Amino acid sequence: MEREINTLVIDELTIEYSIVGEGTPILMFHGGHSNCYEELGYTELVKQGFSLITPSRPGYGATSKEIGKSLFNASKFYAQLLNHLHIDKAHVLAVSAGGPSGISFAAHFPERSLSLTLQSAITKEWLTNKDKEYKAAQIIFHPNVEKFTWKLVAVLNNYFPRFTFRRFIPSFSRLPSKDVMLQIDKESIEAVRKMNNHYRSGNGFLIDLVQVNQLSSTTLQAVACPTFIMHSKNDSAVPLEHAYFAHNNIEKAELCLLDSWGHLIWLGDKAPEVNKKVVSFLHRN
Image (cartoon, rainbow, N blue to C red; front, top):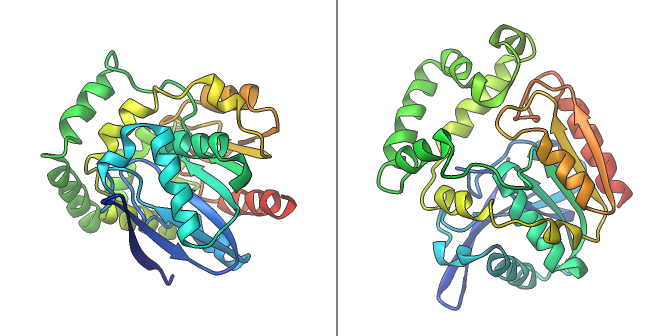
């Protein structure tokens, strides 16, 4: 997949972004620990005539962490990125921890948003300082530690990809590991291996942990564009209640509950169904 990587400097702050494909633009907000090198779910969208513009969100990749002082502030920078690329309107697609970024952009810049697609997305309060996962994340994904965390994951994943994938299953799925493995092929395990090799948390994930809990129902209610909410019934990373919350608060929202194996809905035997549904929604809008 050909990918163009660029940076844009605005008021001495940097946005790193990638462009993949040609055609109708999609402003893509990646999930936690990722960056503008994300590629899960991209291939079919490019084949169907879409261009994906993926900024590394604040604190990820080469994007300045200061841009993320608030969701609204970051949204203003994303709008300037579209200006720089001479794009008037774009579809907005937000994944996992990128959900609040996509919701904020669509809410604050309705004139720039053709539609909003939320995939396995966080839409309300998620991890807080009362949760053991939050406390663990503060340590293993701290900017001074995270590069060693991901280096260890990458080493294990490169040498033992199937074994490592099985160890991650409880983080992604509520199904028993044996049931998940029946839905996963070699290509999916290879995609996870490649994903883990480009993952880095930087300052981004700790920014996410703050901002996901700043998202309010008022912001969701301000989203005016057609919205498509896709969520697996078996997701253990982001509870299904996030999909229901978005559906209840966004007026023009369509809810699509999936029988796929877990959080990474772009992998496994249900992936073609996911691709077909999101492409259909985008073409309709």
